[in-house]
Amino acid sequence: MTTRLIYFAWVRERIGASEEDVELPDGIETVADLLRWLKSRGEGYEQALQYPDVIRVAINQEHVDHREKISGAREIALFPPMTGG
Amino acid sequence: MTGAAVPVVRIQAQDFDVAAEIARLTQGRADIGAVVSFSGLCRDDAGSLSALELEHYPGMAEAEIARIAAEAVQRWPLQGLTAIHRHGKIRPGENIVLVVAASAHRQAAFEAANFLMDYLKSRAPFWKKEHRADGSEGGWVEAKEADDEAAGRWKTSE
Image (cartoon, rainbow over all chains, first blue to last red; front, side, top):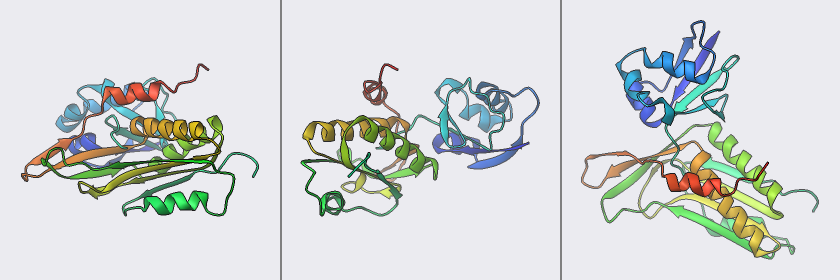
């Protein structure tokens, strides 16, 4: 299944793309698995995801924590802590 | 009127008119005794900042603020609630965000507006990037722990 990944703020800048469609390999079950896999995909990803604990994640536009299962996710967004308001 | 007020949530690039937004909640009604409005503005940090660039997550920004607003109208007896957040380039002195809460009494209006702002700061998907006045590239504004703590104090013990 194809999953759309969306990146914001410095996560977007370091990865060098605002979104991409990926085929997740077998064994990627949780958000934490996804972050670990992404980090191994190249220098930009490595830089963006150097400290995975600070990365916030939304699945289908709702906040989730890193233990959340990602099966069935159409859209997963990765971003830094928010600074609106 | 029966049931909870339906919040108005808008995400927009253009400015808003604070007085007009307050009037929209109170016009033609006699049951509102208190209106609290909060506006957040862009400041220039002692002249060093020329603008803020606000990036947002379209779709989720609206949805997340709507979720927070829906919780506010459940928790406090409100006659009206409005939340407007701008995105794009905003210069010092310009508006960034507006929250208006209307209620029969002041306490509910104060608390709901405060709650909405605290939650909005730590949960609404917006990110601020600085443009420096000297032309050098500014960085992304860092999230403050104090903002998370401010949101945490509203947690209910469920």
